[in-house]
Image 1 (tube, rainbow, N blue to C red):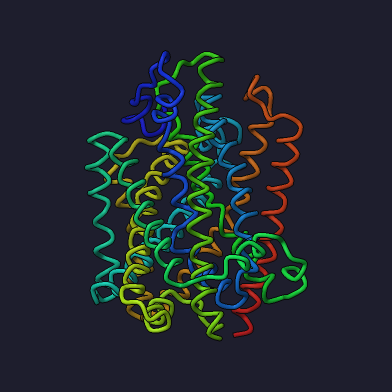
Image 2: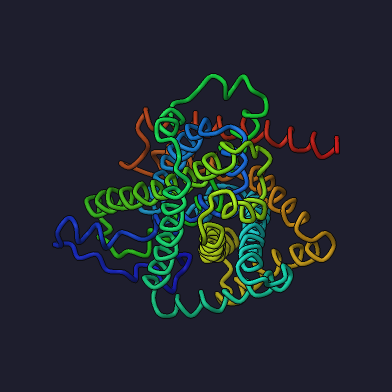
Length: 433
């Protein structure tokens, strides 16, 4: 039985429709995936990169986004070509103990990602409405019921909500860019990789943080499943066409993610770096200083609104990914509301505990910890994905070509090395402190 069986092949793609009508029919899953690349966990590294090093790290955001485009294209191709999502493919290929191990660490990663989203939303509610952090954490958990309601209405409703929230985030940051008056020549130069990124230890650390935390492991499981919500023809031509349109959808959506991550860094550079405020790395500090430094009413409010939209968006997709992973690895069918409630409780308990003990500073440290956990798990999703899509027995005519195959292995190896280095540096800093 497929994962997310209640919406599997529920959206019909008319075989005789025009190119643009088919493109519209396939549009949606890429945007659900893209929200994972602009979640609250990424904001801190983007803010730190802009405030400390001006526009220099824009090239790193661009490179990491290109890596994401490649890996997500492999994920959707696996789902369409084989009819199995990544979790199911792992269960089919590996022994039961290995599958259980992969499921366990993936659940931890999803909980860590959910943790970042819960905290991000709680911080936004605190900044916008003065809601105490602990109350904000609890309020955020209620979206479980909202997701269930939308999914019962139809998968298109979830996609429409996610796209609407992405538009809100993009609109907020487009306005922030306008009022921060960035140096557009500096922005253009920032997209060109500089040797200084490697030679400067501080810059390298943030750069690896951006690269290492960009690709979300649960997105690879998510994408391979939700592309199967479309009812396309299950022959060679139908699958080839589905892969083409799904890849366009994914690429366009991830370009939105590139814009938003770049916009966060650009606003930080134009607002903080130019005024000598190189110490901004926390979301709360950025919120407090945006309006005073720019002298524009509403700058801080729009920043917090974008954060709230980002956090809520990511929780929608994170809970779907949790359901896919449990069903795919374990072949267990729980009611969607129960599955989401379990995932959310795993994230809420540590968030509430840390918020009670140490307040705002603790939530920031928890955000960092969530990114470390994601970094630990990432290679356990990337390597099987590249291996399966390079296997002709599994993929048939849709197997990776030589160029894509070697490029994918280079990306997988690079991500593993960078995450390993980032983890060592993070643990070294913790023990030093």
